Image (cartoon, rainbow, N blue to C red; front, side, top):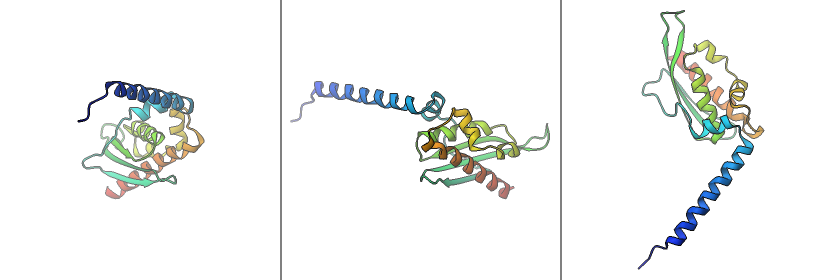
Length: 156
């Protein structure tokens, strides 16, 4: 018969808490507060049921990002197509998640033309920068958005 050892469970919990605290401390030394906020609490994660445009791009690091877009013509204003909803999925690191979250929030309500002008620097500015080894994550988000926009134009 196997008896549960409460002391070892307690020791394990303490070890786990200490490990998590150490990881968070290291991340805070590497990433900005905004990047950590977006990585741990990303917005617009998922897929749209019937996207008007969609793309999946794999970056140079092997991370893959997918972006779905829905647009509507704004008849009240200038008849331009505006992005009304946007979702993303990535299998990438926390920096990729943060970039996906920022880009999807940024383009909501924007015209296709405005969204097409986004650059990796736009994402980096919102996040307060990324370590050099993660800058490609911003490029991946922008490349995926532009591919989704191109797919949207094909579906129009």
